[in-house]
Length: 501
Image 1 (cartoon, helix red, strand yellow):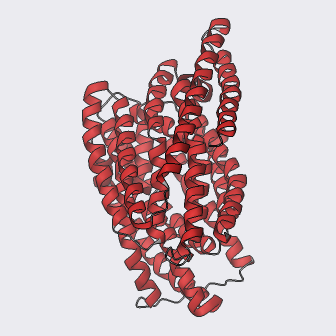
Image 2 (cartoon, one colour):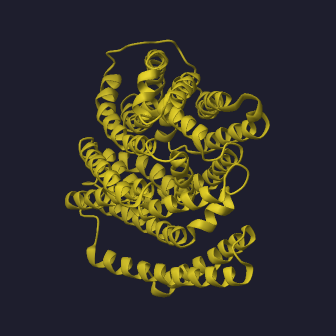
Image 3 (cartoon, helix red, strand yellow):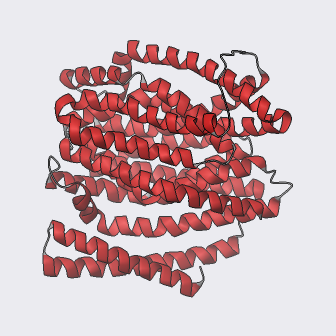
């Protein structure tokens, strides 16, 4: 059971450091709402920022995933010396590619922004293009972040990445509190470069200091490991790119709707990420290097145990988080955002988005695990098929539900598309690997669902009682969320303990 123990330890490490980073990152969102709000200016910034990191963000994430099995192979074949030589070549190779991409971003800014914000008028379009160009150098920061993150994760070292997340958020917070009134949105775009640069530095530091690495300018484009990396990287980029297109499509549809729609979607998504990102992302980040070292055919029992443990942990996070957000979406948004430029009307709209996004938490969480499982088995084709399927569903659902229920239909469409796709992904993986015991998982699911219903009942009673005695205010929202969380989670986990789910 070594893989299970490794996953457990690394997940705990990531939780310890990642929780603080997530909380700070969420505070960044609160400050953004306070100083900028949910309006036309926020929409242009969010479109410009998402466009500036769209391609490099996909490439960087794909590079991290691709590097882990490559480094494992090099370690087995050539040891530490081979790992260092490959890293020399990797840095040189991607520095050149990064510079080319950065220049292309700057030159093609007008066309890229038009794709990401087709509904913007002349003023919004001009501002978004300007902001996009301010953020162009972020490409290089992401390149180095990805290289050193892939290196460290292949060695089962995760703490530097979590610390880098803390540094990233702190830089944003410092800017928003002390400098945003002087340098505005342009300064915020530049701050993003420094923030990701800080992450890259935090990741590079242990590689240079503890691993003893020293860069040498070597470039061998026909190196076999570089060739294998490119072959592995391309389909992952396609798969992740399709996934990212979902968010881009949501923003594009939102650009045709009322001012602030894109911002409201972003703020609601931030809350979802806070509730489930810490545990679920920590788990899948920790499990992937372990799974990529194993052969399911040689260690089926150990891998199956780790997978079932992962699914169980995901359910323990996802169900109470979903119930909490479905029942208490509005008071949660009011507590986090309703101050400064963020109005009561924005709270109402954002809470609607939040409820619809909450429906898809289970699908989003499962997809994170499903794609890593495919990559661990060096299956890069199926994630592309799943991503394309999810994209198709998202486009169809976005159009249908926006016409039916308005802006909230964007969030609902995203949720339904990812749920359907994740269910198919789990079914397909289980058909090949057989790690699910259906009788056992059906019984556990029923027990967890029952615990969720009991938790929801407690939350509804708490909300009704608090509103009756304290009215509809910030204090009332704070009391009902805190008391509801304590009583609701207590009820949920007590039910889990009693039923042995």
